[in-house]
Length: 165
Image (cartoon, rainbow, N blue to C red; front, top):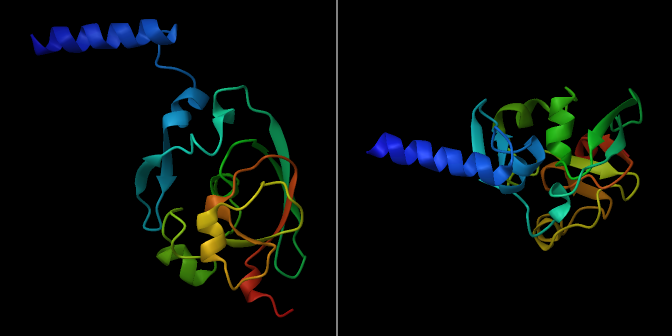
């Protein structure tokens, strides 16, 4: 009986989506995002539906330019608009964390401040109230990569807390 109910449920879900699978990556990411944690595991957290309904619409591509705190080692890659900046940096193998942050980061939950970046432009939109509270005593251009949604071309410096200037 249970397997018949499961098969019926799966069939109805496939029919609902109009596909032979359960939707595109963009549709699935609307409800749940997979996150890498600091200890090599993966956790789930609710998507940012209230913050950005852009996941429902086809997403564009934005150019992200990254450099070290001193301005050296400029790297450019493309990321989908609507993606979390931290995720895009890690997917493109950008060294976001210092030695401490590699093992002790919060996995993108916004609690540890190890993913600080210095935004050179406004390609990631406005700070949330939570991010403003966490960065209260930091320069205005500093952002948490895990809380920043890519909205357009973005230029940033990594690890600004290590900069001598």
